[in-house]
Amino acid sequence: EAEFARASRRAVRRRRTARIAIAVAVPAIAASFYVGARVIARRDLARTIDDKVGGAERELVVARTTSAKLLDLRAASVAEFDAGKSVDASWQTAREREAETSDAYARAASSLEAALLLDTSRADVRRRLAEVTLERLQLAERTFRISERDDLATRLELYDEHNELADRLNAPA
Image 1: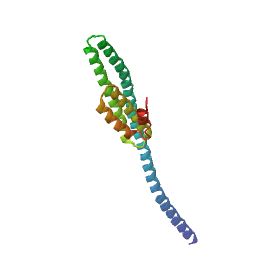
Image 2: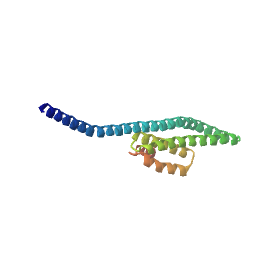
Image 3: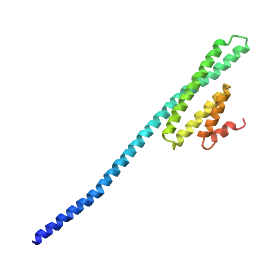
Image 4: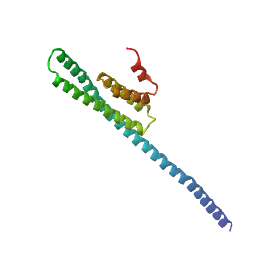
């Protein structure tokens, strides 16, 4: 009879221990699934943002290359005009290059804006977008697109958190 009582107490202890273990394990498992899902979601978000930033960088290479060519084409066209030659073909080429440059900058900005919308806490993306906006603004100014320049100046204020780029833009030459 004493043996039966000891066995009964052990069985009750085991059941109580099992219930406590289950009560602790179920929330721990749920929490680990939640944390794991959050980690995976953050990783996927970071990859998506990095892909968008990479796409923007590729577009910036195109934009900067065509921008450099644009300045040369415009200068050549002005030189032809000064020499009394017909500038229709060279000016048309310069205008096409200007459109290509503007489009490439716009695609880069669009990719960076999409990345920033996915995670507004990414200061590196915000800074990159401000830099691209500054480059677009400078191109608009060089090509005498005043309304576009003014619009980009307004956007620059949004993306340039510490006004470093805007101050550089407004600094005396």
